[in-house]
Length: 291
Ligand SMILES: NC(=O)c1ccc[n+]([C@@H]2O[C@H](COP(=O)([O-])OP(=O)(O)OC[C@H]3O[C@@H](n4cnc5c(N)ncnc54)[C@H](OP(=O)(O)O)[C@@H]3O)[C@@H](O)[C@H]2O)c1
Image 1 (cartoon, rainbow, N blue to C red):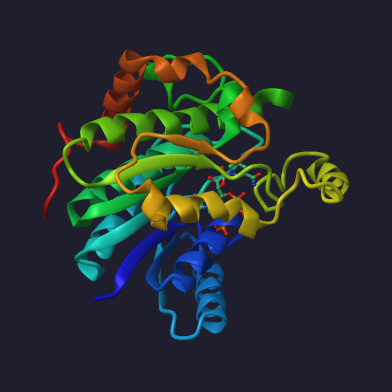
Image 2: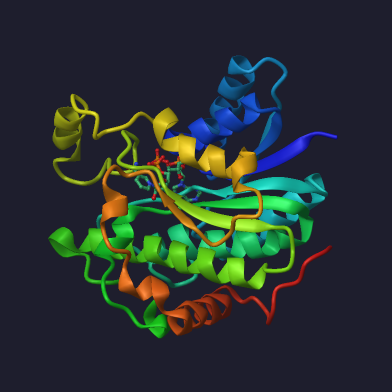
């Protein structure tokens, strides 16, 4: 039977490189994307690059909870058993925008959508499935927030968008830690990673990003998407990570020398963020495995 991987945001950048890498390793890939044309182009590129590869697209705007519920249903119908789920899609918005459900749109895209999608797919995950969350060292820039306000628009302003983006990436890490706790005793694992600084479309709206990217591209600091995808692919497939769960694997050079964000040790905050996120996306009580 085919091994199945689902990758969100595989129309460009790191997600596309992850999808390609998984296809090369023999996975059939389900691409969750918001734009049909870009999705079809990515699926065609994948099929063209890897002989015999199969990729299908599933449309959803991850910032829209109704879309996420629908696409989770479509994925469950299509794939009765999933081996790998990569929560990769993300955005860095410069200005505060409100999602269809009334939340900060960047937090909805980067955290609430993936939170709901993953929870809705738990029932079809194989008993040794691996979940990989594409987070970021930018979690260190998070603005201070209370769980009750986690999806409130922050102060965007000149440097503020990085603080809200940082918050959304810190939420990715809380999600990974708490999900790992809740999955203890099952064979399913979840880990987060940072791809390093990668030349993608992520910062396209950030003023000066093109120029800074141009300078950095002459140094080893700025990576290609294939390099950014490497750690996610290792977590998703290497035997070495079998049974490892709840970790944050940063591939940013030098990051290991930095102390971890203090909030990442706060179990009560982690739990409170989970409870609040569940409430915001309308999930009932404890997670349920099995269909
Ligand atoms: N680039 C970096 O240096 C860096 C560093 C650390 C972490 N990351 C993380 O890496 C992940 C991938 O980003 P990237 O750098 O590869 O950027 P990218 O090239 O802009 O790719 C982002 C992907 O997410 C999709 N996406 C954005 N908003 C969406 C929504 N509302 N619904 C569904 N899909 C949506 C995009 O779809 P469209 O094609 O439709 O726009 C695209 O496929 C993100 O989670 C980002 O936070 C990146």
